[in-house]
Image (cartoon, rainbow, N blue to C red; front, side):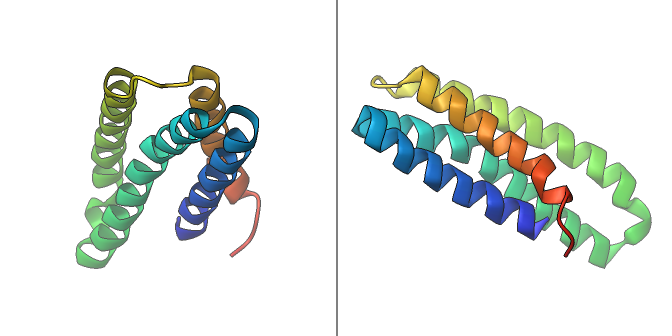
Length: 113
């Protein structure tokens, strides 16, 4: 999970830099906020799963489902807050970065640790 979260963070930073080159400061900020609204909940879920595995491994499947549900709720709330509170939001930059970050979740599983 650590590898996937790091990949998502670097993808967010790369997409934000690319958005800055193409669309300026607002596009970069939109990409940065959109990417981290997906990457932060994933990082929290990864830490939660690691700690739960250490404490009581028999509860891991239940905690995975509960953690995933909470992660989805937090991700949606963060995206909503970015959309409502950031007046200079550039939607294409935010959506493109969210897509890149979510694709990184699948690409991380293709490599071996």
